[in-house]
Length: 259
Image 1 (cartoon, rainbow, N blue to C red):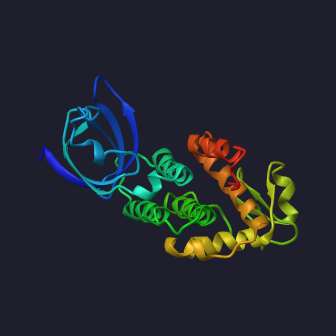
Image 2 (spheres, rainbow, N blue to C red):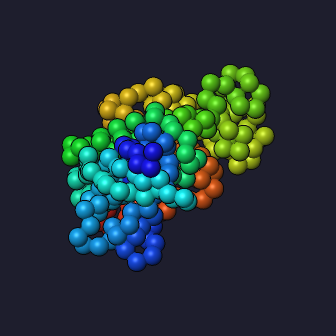
Image 3 (cartoon, rainbow, N blue to C red):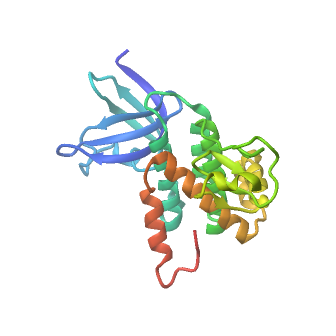
């Protein structure tokens, strides 16, 4: 059939000719795909509200020779609170950037779709502050890496297979935690506390809605963020643009938070 329906989250928009845009979506049915929204930049376009970044929408797509196009669209969730909070909006763009950068086109992953949608929903809640939002994002990063097959080794030393003993470290190059005896196997390994490994285990098994409730010591969470930043940069093969923007925000004189 030429026409088919998908339920999708919009990951990215790119300008094309005239008023058209190339939209990258992640759908429940097909995973990541690129589609064309003809005339969407026009003020009178009925599609505009459903194809904004991180919108949750129903789309009727038309099969084309090269790229499919959006025939009709219906917005399900616009996440209005996120759009009024610059830092949270940047975090939402960040997780969309991760899904876009790490997902192959045309490969369905309903679990990842649900995780993305659920995470956006929790970020959109007004009572979730930035420190809680950061914990939700950390949980998303770990769960996503697991769903994509990139989860690092956390149960034992990734180098020798023995229990994690001594002053442990985390090696992005080797793909997991290394014990005190194997730290020298990677000079770039990040020295960490064993509590950070325990936190990673906890975040993996905690539902997105409960991630904000976990009590975490700042020093442990800072170690975790260093690990996750190194991991995602390694798999994306670049720095996430949205995180770079968030770091600029945090350097502003009136900003008190820290990511």
